[in-house]
Image (cartoon, helix red, strand yellow):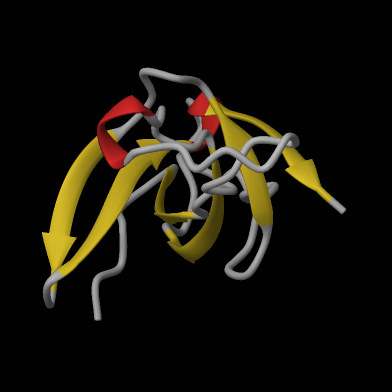
Length: 94
């Protein structure tokens, strides 16, 4: 298993619908990559100037939204995932 360092998180993209509301099928090459994902694992958090650990606001299993150009795509055990800083996450979906 992969554990990110510091204030980084490992995210699995959640695929969107492959059809429009009118029922048209969207081809793969025309689809935008989703900006929604599920947190797979989180780092321990960054450290402040005094060396104290800053707790992460997200945890594994959280569904999150992130910016269009956020993170770095990586492949672990054949699965495409993203690693990004916690600050790249726009919010948590409830």
